[in-house]
Amino acid sequence: MIKFKPVSEGTKFLTTSLLMLSFLSVFAQQTVTVPTPLSNRVADNEPALVSYASYTPYDSTQVLRNDSSLLYVNFEKDESVLKHDFRNNAATLSKMEEMVSRIVNDSLARVRTILIIGMSSIEGSYEYNKQLAMNRAISVKSYLQQRFDLPDSAFELVSAGEGWNELRSLIEESQFDGKQEVLRIIDNTKNPWLREYRIRTLNNGKVYQYLLDQHFAEQRSAGYIRIYFDEVQPTVSPVAVAEEPEPRQEVVTEVQAEEYPLVAEPQSAPVTDEDRNWLLAVKTNMLFDAALAPNVEVERWFGANKQFSVMAEVWFPWYVWRHNSNAYEILTIGLEGRYWFTRTFKAPNRPLTGFFAGVYAAGGKYDIEWKSKGDQGEFTSLGATFGFAWRIGRNLNLEASASAGWVSGPYRHYEGRFDDTHLIWQRNGHLSYFGPTKLKFSLVWLWPDRRRR
Image (cartoon, rainbow, N blue to C red; front, side, top):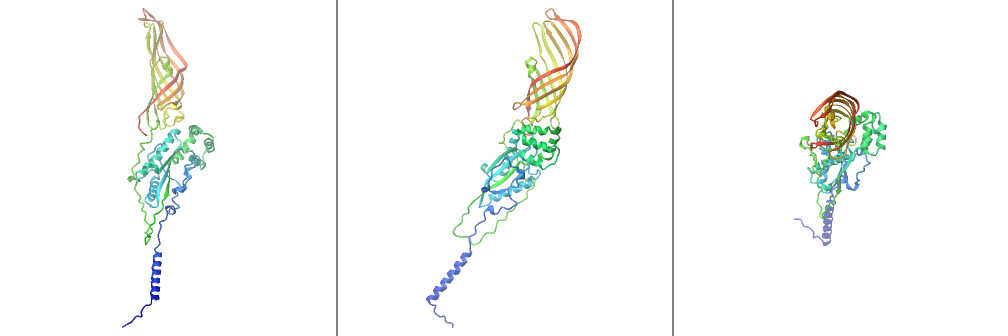
């Protein structure tokens, strides 16, 4: 049998102390693990994901296309519908969703502001493009709200309007005839529509066509996006967990284009007077109206750029008074073909604006009598027209024009007898005239079909 020696009190104390130290040492090794803030986990290739501490407001002088910290999506010409399968949108939208998802699912962060800057190319009127740019920003916002529970307050929408800074940057990197003149126009013309008009008319439109073909599509990268987040302080319990949890694996699923329906244009965006198709124009010449000559004209445009139009007119004063001794009767029917040189002058998205020239053919008959002496006849007329039209209201244009040409036709001079119940022939004649034929100052009503383009 083995016998143990009695343990002294001093030995008991020493043993107990060693056990306590050993226990404290083991406990100390179970350190509290505090998750790393999101700002420390943002990769270098994710510059669009930014802490709100680094927030910078939109700067209208900034060239956004050169800012690598912005994502961007593309839109088709004159549209604000966000299409997932258009150009490189699929990759951009997937990246944007991944970033927002990381913030939403992170316990140490929250979405603070998603900055969306809408932009358009310079084609069209300044006010129209400003609204188009805002509609594009709203479409990106709607796209994200369909996928994440984000309030309106989580978004900052900016309409950058026409991307003149972007266009100038692209022009500086290009080589083409007229480059320096375009830069001079951009730098020295403050009015945006006049600036565009001067570029349009440069070198008979060849420079503008080059910019249209090469650069305008890049300006339609209208959804520039930066995502800001706030850091949230972790709540650490005095009793720490024993082990650090394994990092959560983020799974990014590549979604096919058809799984993302097109985002409809926001219903909240106002419809401008130019954001629709126009059916035709109905006109009246106010100078003829003042001369008590009722008249009406109908005009319709055609061609890819709406630079051609056909106009039909009729005017028909038909008055008899003083027991038939006075007559003012004229019936004229005419057709005119026109070419619009500067359809986009000041009202770019409306047809029948700017300078135009045309050729016309007309014919009719007349009976002009004064105090029982008068002339009856028929006539034909051929000539040319030059004029200008500009927008004055939501559906109204004002048109001024002058025509000159040739008028020819037979006439018969007569006298009225027996209270003008009998017209007595006096002689025949033939009218032949070359000179000014028509002067018009017309009110033009553009008839809309009220459908969004």
